[in-house]
Amino acid sequence: MQTATPSLLELQCALRASLVAHDDRGISAHVVGGEIGAGERLDIYRNTFASVLTTALRLSYPAVHRLVGAEFFERAVRVFIETSPPRSACLDDYGHEFPDFLSGFEPASSLAYLPDVARLEWSVNRALHARDAEPLDAQRLVALEEAERGRVTFALHPSASLLRMDHPADLIWRAVLDEDDATLSAIDPCAGPVWLLTERLPTGVEVRRMSESAWRFTSALCEGRPLAAALDDARDFDASVVLADHLAAGRFIDFSLNETSA
Amino acid sequence: MNRYVLAASTLSTAVGLALAIQASPGQAQGVKDMSKMPKVVQDNMMRMEQNKLEKCYGINKVAKNDCAEGAHSCAGQATKARDTKSFVMLPAGDCSKIQGGKTTAS
Image 1 (cartoon, rainbow over the protein chains, first blue to last red):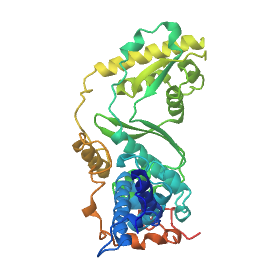
Image 2: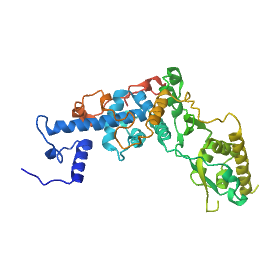
Image 3: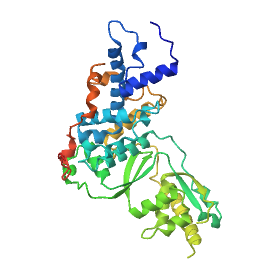
Image 4: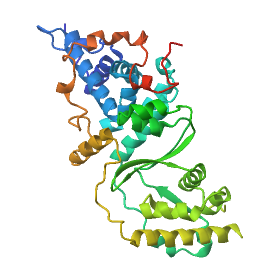
């Protein structure tokens, strides 16, 4: 019996249902059978789909992988794939929802620090793959009128992330990846919060701690708060030194003048 | 001090400092010192650099799409992958090495 020829879109949607939701009803009639049945043929695609995504996440989340063990990781990822299948054809973009998934994933709930470690790993992944960007030339700021200087806000380099974490995820991350068991056993997983900066420098990807006040000041400037307003909350540190460090490191790629008066 | 005056002077100081830092020797760039990064991150960075011209588009990307790497036969595992709802495992990796991070069934 001949069914109406489906459109490409219909076939793609049916194959997607088969891959993601294991629902073969729409697609199996259109699979050429033979010695190997349609279901088994689709299993090959399903298996490749799942194992490719599992490998992608294992590469993006190596510390999470080691913390929970290979078997747990693989099974957690299978559940994740069903709830968050890829929306981009780029595997490097896949998995940014994984930290949120982990924080709601009951079997991992005994590891309260795990979602923080995952968030840190995603920031490293982002630092690795972000586009290159020309740093802001500090000379351009010299040309500003005095009245304009209080209205300056900055655009953070696309490889950089500012993270605030309840747990010392940076210590856990590094010790796990360095296989440093002595440090691991000495870590107090509740010794937080920590304020982190992840970025790609010419020398490589770096994760470093900032003081809370310097972190808040930097976050405010990069979220569009003008300098004069950001300085209102800057009490116990030298803002010009922090700012100089960002500028010299090429951490900003542009500035703009906030129109609203601070 | 007026906050705009403060902001202006903070920015001027910062720019002066930044230019001084950038002008000082020891700022030689382009030398890759990746020793501070964990090995896994170094490996990922190297993969990324090797694949610079081959950005994205799903297939054939980095090591993420290597079918042969999988420990499972092509179709073998997916047929058994329907038990994801009955997930009763506990994490069983390096988490056991963290004090107070012990895995207990709750």
